[in-house]
Structure formats: C-alpha cells, structure tokens
Image (cartoon, rainbow, N blue to C red; front, side, top):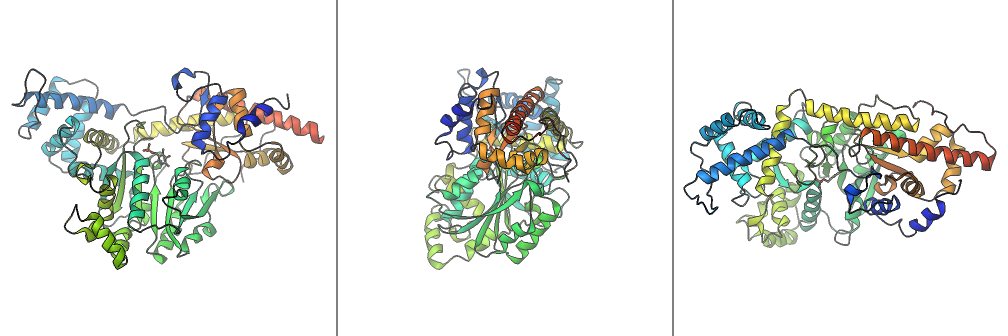
Length: 556
Ligand SMILES: *Cc1c(COP(=O)(O)O)cnc(C)c1O
C-alpha cells in the first residue's frame, strides 16, 4: 500500500521536470487514463487543470444571433440582393425604424429584449447615435468590410472603454482618456506587447524586467526566449503573506535597472488581488520611477470584489491587458483588449530614444504614416501585429468586435451585478465543497481572495495540519510532481503543478471554474485519502502517532 503508485509515477516523471505546467498537464491526463485530444470521452477523469470555465454568458450570445438575423434582413433588402444568394451592404438610412420593426416582430424571442435594451442604453446612457451604433454593429456582424479603423471600430472603442472603466477603474479617480486595441484574446495581447516593446527598443536583450510571481507561465517563458534574452527579477508573493507582495519585494522595483514590471492581477494561480496598501505602495514607487513600464494582466479582475487595477493608480505607466475569455466563458471567441493612457510613458520613452534608434524606427514605420516619429505605441502594436507591411488588413475580425461590444453592454447594463454575483457564488460554492471534503475549514474573510483558482500548497497545509517534522519527512519522500501523478493515476484527478507558475513550494493548482460541485467533492476526497496514507506511512516509519484525520489549526 505504502509504495503503491510510486514506481509507476517515477518512470513517468523522468524528463518531465522541464515541461511547462500546460505540457505536463497532458502527461497527467495520460496518467489518468484519458487522452488530451478526446476531451468529452474522459467522463470519469476529473480535469481541474484547465482554466477554461465550464459556464458561459447566454444573454449577450442570444443578442448576437438576433442581431445576425436582423443584419441578414438588412443585406437582403438591399438593392443588390439576387435570389442566387448575392446580398448587399446594410443601409444607414432608416435603420432604426427597420430595427424597431424587427424587434416588434420578434418580441419575446431570447435575446431580443437584451438587444433592444442595448440600443437604448447606447443612446440614452452613453449618448451616442442609435443609428450609427446599429449601423456599425450590422456591418460588423455581416463582416463585409475590413476592420476600419484597424485598431478598433469607432463606437466599439467607446463602449469597450466604458466597460473597462467600470470594471477596472470603478470609482477611482482617473484623469484623461485612454486608447483601446481590440485583440484576439489576452495571449495575443501578450505576444503583441512583447514584440513591439522589443522592436521599439523599450526592452533590449540583456535588459532586466520584474515579474510578479507566481504568474501565468508564458510570462516566465517568453523573456527566456532567444528573441528576448531578458534578465528577470522576481517580485514574490507568498502563501504566508496571503499571496500579497511584501514591501521588501516591491522595493525591488526601485532599482533603475528594472525597465518594466509585468504582473497578473488578480494573480494566476493564487487568484488573489493585490491589496489596497500594496497598490498604493506601487503607485508611490512609480512616482519615484516615472520611467517604469507596467503591464498588468487583469483577466480575472471581474471576478474580484471592488476591483481596482494598477491602470487606475498609475495610468501613465501602465499597459492594461484584458480578456473576455474567462468571465464570459468565451475562450473560443478569442476576445481581448489592450488599453493605454493617451499620455503615457511608452510614447515618452519612444520620443527619448537615441538618434540612431529613431532613424531605424522611422524607416520601419514610414510606409504607413507620413509622421512615423510620432506614431503612438498602441498604433505601433497594431502595425507590428501584421509585420507593418500588412497594416492595412490589421485588426480583430468585426464579428468578434460585435460580440465583444455585446458582452460589454451586457455587463454595463447589469447594474445589480446579477451575472457577476452568480459567477462568484458558483466558484465559491465549489471551493467550499473541495475544502470540506479535504477536511480543511474553508477560510472566508480575505477580501482580496478571488477563488477562480486555489492552490493546494503541500508544505503550507501539511505544516499547519501535521507539523514541520511531517513536512520535512514528506519533502524527502516525494519527488516533484509525484503527488500530482499519484492523484492522476489513482484517483483520475488532474491538477497543474503550482511550481511551474513559480510558487516556492510544491503545490497543485485547482481551477474552480471548470467542473461541477460534486466533482470538487470527489477531488477533495482524493486529496484527503492521499494525505492520510502519507501520514500513516510517516507514523509507521518514525513511530510517531499523528492523527491522519486531525483538523488544522485555524489560520493566524
Ligand atoms: C487565461 C489567461 C490568459 C489568456 O487569455 P485568452 O484571452 O484566452 O488568450 C491571459 N492571461 C492570464 C493571466 C490568463 O489566466
């Protein structure tokens, strides 16, 4: 019993230590008897490794399909329509009257009330022309023109801007305006930003950047690539500090060598938002270092209570990355946004580059503008996303932009936050179920906890529950990832290794977004069984008498 699974696990683990958590996940899935490709077939496997949610926003999707039907009607009423299936472009004139008629005819259909409400909201609350909005959306959903402007459609930018304002800035004061670039999800945002920063000498090989750790692994992997060759300073958040950065860690940002600070807030995997004191502390450091570039990836901000982004506190220094993937259950859509303040450190740094560097960049961008020296960083992102030469076909597909607008309006119009609260309830019930079955009291009360993921930190939980001596023994017994492989082999439970994300201790990341509550109960029981088995082994080998089902001491 004591060694069951070990031999196997060891064989499978050789050579796996270098894998990223996402590649290791595929090995764990194999160990759990599943195949990474045939997802629906693995009914008995519990894959809590995926960040992909198992919920999705229905109302704005209904709105999208209804808008599509309206748009088809518009195309087919056009003078160009032929019965062979050739339609024309929508007409701006009279579009409101035709839309009103469409709404009346389809009253009661799913998505119609939302769509009609969205048009009213844009007119009455946001103050834009309903006709212009309907025309932009109708043309967009028909996808009959290249995205123009390429960075983002016109009213689309205003509406997405309002959404980001509400979710990322909230009631925090914010002076000035910001620009938005609509992109193919948060991952495209990262690719574009790293690339344009390098092409524009904002980060050069050998430069130093700081990473807020632990972090979504690509942020660890990209700087190491041959293309970048960056030195990384870790700003560590620890479980002992409730996953907050201490002042000593944040003080690393005072070093003038640190060109940029990349972070995920709320974090992935700990799923904790930066507390107010640390936000204020970072803002203070930025005053001392006005040249510091910050990239904040706030994909999970919408799941937090009273979220305020670093973009609100240090707007001129901060690039905001947002993705619609998680909150709206829309990973397949590929929807995200990059925002920068109109007066920002990136453009100031570009203006202060050396003569030679400026000359080179002048050449790079002279095919797309008569004034390449003053091309804004965010427009360089757009151009670089299509290797400059294809700038005229850059931009996110227009139906994607339409769905992004409908998601944004859905959220803006949901003033009681019913959708947000429903999602929070969902993931927090799952966490409670998991912890109950593990035999660990569910800790509420940390207002910064977001709970999209939770980290099962073997060392931290083991020590609190069974003492330091047990943890020291355990760490000697098990190889990295061995517990994850045993969970996979013996209980068919797949978790991701926390250490791959840069957690200091061996741990497993449990996504609370992608399984049902009963599944989290099963995972909790499997973790408990495994723990008790190791405690039994420890007792047998050391002659100690730990109670395997003992409850941990409450958190200090
Ligand atoms: C999931 C995730 C992303 C990826 O977002 P997409 O929009 O699906 O590309 C980016 N950053 C973090 C921190 C994530 O967790």
